[in-house]
Image (cartoon, rainbow over all chains, first blue to last red):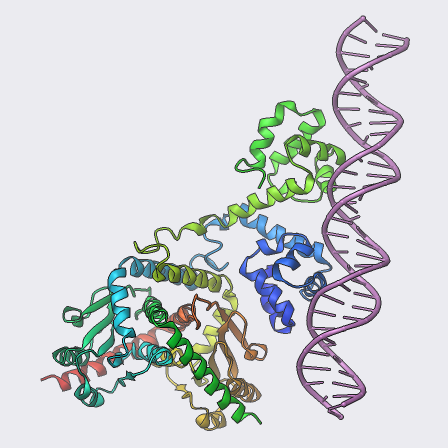
Amino acid sequence: MSEPKTTVRELIREKYATLTASEKKLANALLENYPAAGIASITVVAQNADVSTPTVARMVGKLGFKGFPQFHQSLLSELQAKVQGPTQRRANWATEAPESHLLNRFSQAITRNLSQTLSNVDHDKFDKAAGCLADTNGRLYIVGGRITRALAEYAFTHFQAIRERVTHMTSSSATWPHYVLDMVTGDTLLMFDIRRYETNLLRLAELAKERGVTVIVVTDQWASPIASIADYTFNCWVEIPSAWDSNVSTMMLLETLIAAVQEENWPRAKDRYERLDEIFEAARLFRKP
Amino acid sequence: MSEPKTTVRELIREKYATLTASEKKLANALLENYPAAGIASITVVAQNADVSTPTVARMVGKLGFKGFPQFHQSLLSELQAKVQGPTQRRANWATEAPESHLLNRFSQAITRNLSQTLSNVDHDKFDKAAGCLADTNGRLYIVGGRITRALAEYAFTHFQAIRERVTHMTSSSATWPHYVLDMVTGDTLLMFDIRRYETNLLRLAELAKERGVTVIVVTDQWASPIASIADYTFNCWVEIPSAWDSNVSTMMLLETLIAAVQEENWPRAKDRYERLDEIFEAARLFRKP
DNA sequence: AAGTGTGTGGAAAGATTTTTACAAACGACA
DNA sequence: TGTCGTTTGTAAAAATCTTTCCACACACTT
């Protein structure tokens, strides 16, 4: 161990695997609201986590404490140390790692990116774009670039779960003409294009536009050339202290779009989800030895 | 809260004049080491101030508390409030959209997830895991589940750009045995397993472990069963107001891991990046009209 | 389908903390 | 110097919190 004194949090994480079901429930409640959830009497702690008093006592024992009071005391001194030490800064946000640790540098950059991205989303356009993505009268085509292919795939997996008529255009541009051939007015094309922008994608957007397809592009803060011809553009802040770009904010925007679409036609989406689950379940049982 | 705003400290100052001699002694001891001196059982507090227990009880009563426990509680909440002070700084985060708009509900949930995830990363384990991922003496295998396949792919794309000997195990488990066959001690297996956990992945982890492979698993806050046999586990908070789980925090953790690996062997990674760029550039020119 | 083992919570026993009761100590004033 | 009011601490009672014990429930095995 690098540090002589481990925090209760670390202790919980360390022993987490050895905990039983309701002990895990308690552990989660504790971590979720740390350390507040732990600094009360054992009865209250138990009640808040919705487990029994003995469960708390047992887990505390497993964690290596002599009894609940000792655990309680430990939590208290942690809390106090936090207040007194200069560690007060961002204690809750960041890890206990040193300020200069990569984790902290990253969390800072990513917070910034998310914040910038969010405050640059026009919620009116967002709603309209979600409407297009939800419209099953037309087909929904999804495509990404070299790096963003993973995002496109993620989008495809989810959209496929909540609506019909979704197509993932593989990143091999050789196959694109086949898809373009069938595009008609009323269809929607969701594109991901982060720098370095790909010429292929621009061509594809042009072709789609010629056929009356609604083009939605998710790009970075500098905007892909596609933005100038797209119907809806979303800019995501992607800079991080690294040689490449972050896609956390892109992911967030994508997930929010998916959620919006899901909400738009809920009963249908729900029905699909349930049937999908059934099928997966069936496949699983099928395989069981 | 019966005491709406005032801190215990202010309360003591306010009533100081009305206190008796030994009560003043206690008050001084309290202020001298605030709030630590107050956060203990009444007996301990009394001993530290060198007064009797009833004196403490009486003073606490004069201060307006119903009993010592209430006083105790009050000090505790003060302490806690101090620790989680700057958590409310989400104000400048959201868009101008109405509070109830999906965008805001989402940004809230995601902030929470990121914060929880970060504060639960053990930076020591993080560094060690990054070390394994960077070690090119062994092969690096990457695999994901149904939903997390996209993340695995994203990981693959990036790791491939910064180091040699990376394999993406396709999500079709039929092909896995071929990969397992070649696994040896010193190899690393990076797995993504978010609920619903997949039995296949657990089996794969077991097989890999038997062959001495280091297993790193990125899972959710409830921990995949793989966590109990994995060498390194990272928990990502994934709950959002939706029928499915968010992978924004997972993405963040992944990107941070990638960055750590990149930093670990920079000159080599840089070289690979440059050569990769050259090749992509060449391919682009090739196609240019 | 019965048996074994583990996990869980109810409730009583045990320990600790808090409150109360009371008497000794101190100082003020006649 | 004696009496009174106030303050203070000791010790017992009361309240509360913690631990232990045990029976039940559930899962997994034979």
